[in-house]
Length: 340
Image (tube, rainbow, N blue to C red; front, side, top):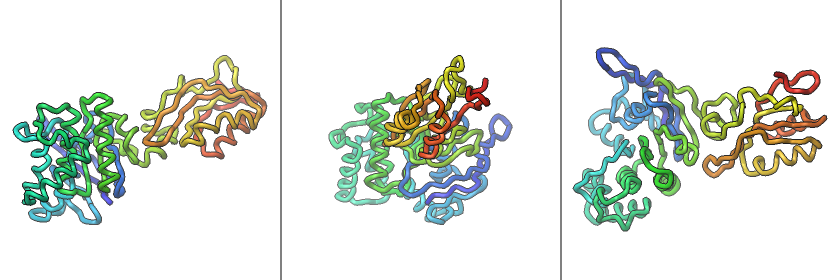
């Protein structure tokens, strides 16, 4: 378990104090993938550097399995740093070394002998799918391949935590997928806890179990991705799910529908069957007025604006809510027509 408790960090800039982190607290469960997201300047990279022990916070605690890493120094601090593998932002490989040589760097620093070092490097190149590039120098690799080698290097010392700072920055969608696949394999096959600092919500959509949203150095939202997207007021829901036309107003066009609502459905059964079953069961006409379907990890999630017409429209909506549909609906007047 990683626990960040009331972390603060300030910098001096042009004679004034800038508070990059302002009382940040969050928890990371072992073996999970956590996305730390937010706009530029929100404090994401500062938080990453503090968790990686590359920056010392002004106050607060960073606990790993109960030990406060902020309080460590000397040999204990160096040992703690080896438990946190870091994939820095940007291209960080040494140009004079081959791919295998870059992966071997942390092992050489730790004094690992040749045969054991070569075996570990081979395992990691296999993990990232680049065994055939072992003798190739970084300038002969694509951006995505260089980033995958950087992930392999960060995993060399067998850390329990892998921290990736903007790992897909400037990569095209196909290359991004290859890097995210490697991070997911690190979690699945090595049991590593992965923290991904990113502005790219596609990373959260495809990889993250949990998410923390930073704004102005503060955590303004955090939790499991699938829980947050079901909350109508969630920032993450509005960012990850498809938009619905005029979803903020939820008004029917020309009063054609008795009930108009925005609905979020999570999971294969709900996405595939709930709407048509409600329509048939309650003999109502159900129209999709906007929205669409996406996938969060392996889970399908739909967000629709729907219009229900028929005497039992209210009962149909209630029935869907009872079956875990998440609904935000328009106010309804006494005659059953959504109010303007």
